[in-house]
Image (cartoon, rainbow, N blue to C red; front, side, top):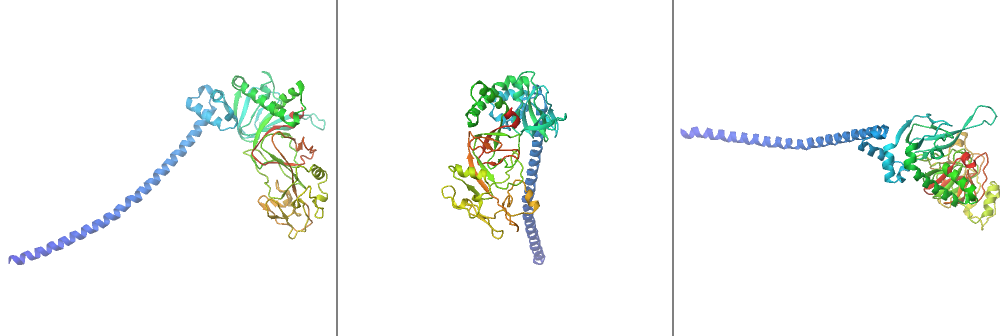
Length: 456
């Protein structure tokens, strides 16, 4: 009887154990699935943390720029040390302040003011008392001078005599002439512009000695240029000192067109090379083109997408012949080979439009000779007709017209150019503009003087 009672209990126990074991296995399976979730959750949490850090950095950067703006707009005596550091950091971004010693920079950051100008706003008028010294932090300032109208009318005309870009300074010339000196030009913002402004007293106390050294260095460099070697004696020294006050020292990157053939640019009338090299190009049938802006920097209008034929440096007669007769037999297919003056690849040929090409001795590729183009294609700014900025343009059927570029010479430090005229080769320049194109072949630096100050 007892055996009959115990047996069902044992079976029930086995069933219960099996049920518990199954529940335990199910629980372990669910636990494994649950354990996978924290990895996903941690990934989501990490992403959220990264986004939060980025947001905080963004707001911190915006806050830093806001603090910088507040520090710049404050008067020097009210700036805290942290704000003075922000002002100095802003000044050191400009090339002009990078050459100032730390003691002068420490003094300047306490007195410099920051001024914003909207487009077209006048900074000062002509004949106004000169009271401040300026460094362009952003934008462009143009200087305008009043002249008598050519027609003899009483209505004055204004001409642009100079332009100043980011990192360039101006107005030291009038400040150095005395306490009651007056402005010779009107200054106006060509775009939204910001300036670092230093008052006359701070300029005389901190920067006058530095600018005297700078002017002496400019006079010394001008004296060493071949163009000014005839300026001797007291009169010559006076003329060089006056020119030094008008000099704009401008850095230009490699491959920049500083003078475009056919352009008249009186603001950049005189160029003195103080660093780098410049090649002189002569373009037959030049297109309508505009001057490259040296801003941030400067656009490269074209960088030799066409064949450039080099002439021997000793071929003086050949150069003069080309300059005087740009369309003579040297440019024709049937011209005799001049082995002493030209290489075979230097002879430019005419061909019909079908398959017309010219092999460049440098690039080793075929490029089409310029053909007659539609009227809209002739208005291409800065690119020789028949060529795109990235390569040759497809020929159009029609009468052929010669298009070639000759590299006449290469100029280096010490050479001077006056609107395309060199003192070495006497390239003439008339009212139609420069007869040559000047392109920098390396990072270069120039002394630039406008027409009116140079001829004064």
